[in-house]
Amino acid sequence: MIVRKEIVPDQPLTPSQIEMLNALAARPVVPDADCPELTPEQLTQFRRISAENRKGRRKQTVTLRLSPQALKKAKSLGRGYTSVLSRILENALDNPDIVRKNL
Image (cartoon, rainbow, N blue to C red; front, side, top):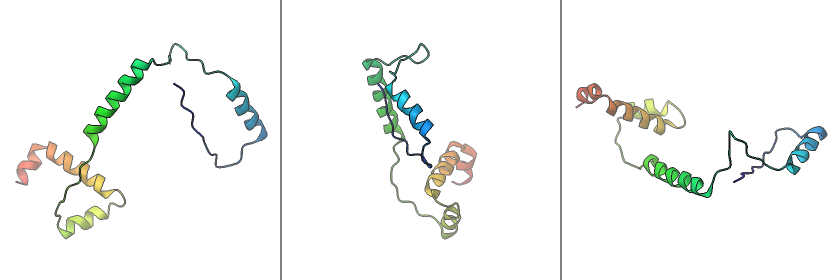
């Protein structure tokens, strides 16, 4: 399976770069021993594993009440502070000493 992506450069391409890209576009894609072409069965296996992993990583929405001070500190972390809070909470829950201290 060949994946093609369009790349938009920041600057216009030079004539020599355009010529090189056109020459490459005409060449066939040939898999080598280090990276053989995947069989349909292998691709199906990748899709299945990927779907299973996605289910395990899907985040769930919850309501959580925080003190004004905790919320202010969290928001001071900037954009993406909810993801940071999630990682902090996960790490804290993995540490039995922190859990016992805060019960």
